[in-house]
Length: 296
Image (cartoon, one colour):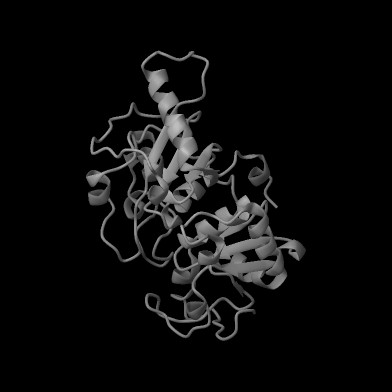
């Protein structure tokens, strides 16, 4: 198990708490607060939808004041191919995007999306994996925000963040297969995709043999906010996390899987992410495919 999960700050922030922090940041910038206040706050807007319109126009129409837009497809993922539809980005590209957004080693970073949480979780996971410890997700996303929105595009001073990967556990295809046999590998996609009843995106339907169905949509309430930690812990215990030597997660392309890793983190359970996920696994015809019921 990776110890970073237990030592990192809480991974969620409420809209009310973020509004308070932003107000304090404005006061600090204006010189009305003590210089020994908290580290600089960076807010990242990562709006994105699978198969949906680009997120930048929505950002330009209105975003949390001071937030910088980050493109999931171009900056939080590499080009689609044999490694999947959203493989890990080139570290130089990712690091440059974070520095351009104002992220420094000591920054407090808050990420949000439109409310689903998947894209924000991807940004949270990448930053945490790349060594940045103080990263939080706005619980409920922009839909939870009650403050004013801005159409001004900020120009933050460049940050100094340099990615140092390895702070969170990462699986490749062979590691995911091994974990499905020896630990607990959770499939975060919808149950019908896991069972192979439908497959709207990837070439083959089904799941990695031995994986357990655990749709990430069941980790949140109707408003998109995460269930309480106790409820999440109970859910993952029922799925076998309490007895597993290690827990891993995959999804379609490593985006909603990051959201499940975040839910596990909230529950106090370290988990590895198979970033290539089903979109990588299913491209190789030599890899086995299972279909059917929600376990195994």
